[in-house]
Image: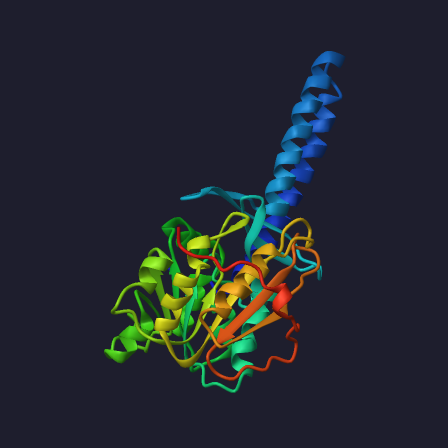
Length: 336
């Protein structure tokens, strides 16, 4: 059996490999330049162009570690780049926007984006949150963070695209998470009620469900959760069929009394267009008794502004909530 590499091991390996490659490239460049200098002028110029192209490709490989992933919604790109704090992060980019990001090394379970940290508002409401459903997997950024920070938590993640799940396992440390908390294919929350456990024998705390999220919500056998997190996008666009009043009612049907619904909503036109936020608040206000908005603004990686919308039939008082009046409300979204 091969040894599993931990997050810090992988980061140090990447740094070591990059250093070795850089040293080799430097030696090759010096040697090649000396050889080319002895050639006739036209040949030397061609060789220098080829060498420059090879150096550029090697540099891109070392610095960005790029990969292409074919998904249901087109090609996605996985590569490494610096975050706002200068730390290297691995990002999943699709449709011209970042769908997820992960630090490397010891910080691999720490969220990069502010809106992922904002989801932790569910733990600040005074409710006993133990079972959470996450709609949209991506790089599993928030489930990684939440499971690492809350040892009594179980999270089911519904992701429609198996290619995204495979990418999360390969490049975003989901396999490392599974090794720590136990994972099952299917609902770990439902499995816990039936006494099921992960292959390691421990009670699984991560459930990975490859399915359409709306279809999962409409299943009568799906369990009830203390909170439902909606972070579903197709490129730049939110998944509308998960933002309608009918979808909100389906979520509510799978919440415990007073449970929480939390949605990540993104602005448009560099933060100037809040139409979808207004429509989301109006829609959720038709289904839940209390709806609040929390800003989750990022510097550096995010091109638009993120807002966390929290809805519940129970009491709700979030310290950073933005007040709004009826004039702010947009149109209620419905299926069709």
